[in-house]
Amino acid sequence: MFRKITLFLAALFLVEGVYTQTRYHPRDIQKAYQNETRSFDGTPGKAYWQNSATYTIKLVISPPNRRVKGEEIIVYKNKSPQTLKSLNFKLILNHHKPEAARLNPVSKEYLTTGIQVDKFLENGKERLWNYNDDTTNKSIPLTEALLPNQEVTLTIHWSFDLSVQSGREGAIDETTFFLAYFYPRISVYDDYQGWDTTTFYGAQEFYNDFNDYNVEVTVPKNYIVWATGNLLNPTEVLQPFYAENLAESMQSDDVIQIARLEDLAKKQITKQTDANTWKWNATKVPDFALGLSDHYIWDAGSVVVDSKTNRRVSVQAAYDEASKDFEQMVNFGKDALKWFSTEVPGIPYPYSKSTIIRGFADMEYPMMVNDNSQ
Image (cartoon, rainbow, N blue to C red):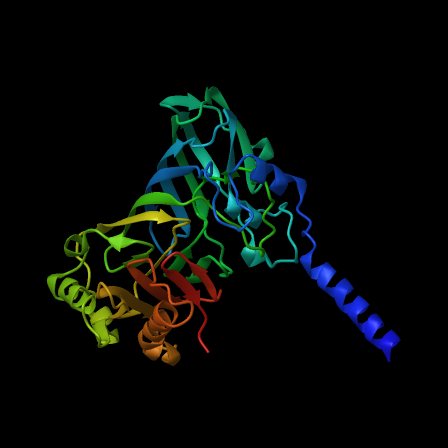
């Protein structure tokens, strides 16, 4: 009996010893601990930093033409202690190019020519954009090195074709588009790996800096645009009745039908100029996505996500007539936001709205969801 007890205690000691051993940490993480940018308990260290940028983007989209033209100004600030001699860009849409590396075979409808850059300027001076290495990553040397706490201003004019086959992004139908990863952006430069140069193969997850976005989307009349962030000019793009419906929905516990099927048929929802420019703003978000259509029904309501401040969040849904399950989508969205904000994990939803668009991807983006219909 004594021997059995001894063996049991010895085994217990060994098991306990396994659980109290220091876990293995890769060398790059150990270096971050030493530099005090990261802490062992998972919190940011006292020397932690993140780079960020402000993106000012103008898009022109003219469905059913799938060609999208864009102009952007990126003001990128180097908050790191290192001097940056180059920048790494993410050109995610280049995974549609025929020669791109992919995890799975794709159909002909998936293929495009990728992102075409027509003009590139660094601090106002035009630079040559070399297409020879345009994959989903592109490293560009800077004319002048970017010192710590300095900014560089980049101007890029680009265009691309939306793919016919819709997934995370692309043409949902001939006049309904979803745009994601659609702009050249600077990839993450962090405190222990440097530049994120991971190749995008079309399916895996990835991450971005927290940036500010000012985005203008010019579309023909009768097209509605939904996007990340707040719509700054609803009275400039919507007829008064529909602008009032949208405003009412922001404070309503009930679902407001902003634009019904019969409203869409009348083609009087938007201002009747040849084109309308929808203006959006979002701060401290990791990405920007948008959708547009001339025949999607538009519902909206709101829900309190923070009982201490009584802060409300707008929940919106955009869908085609055939997607009957979407008729309850605003309520589904409200219930989800309330539960996660008050129960698990119990942290109030940080953004001003959530928009669910009927697409094909079942994918989420800041304040946007591209969701399939059942």
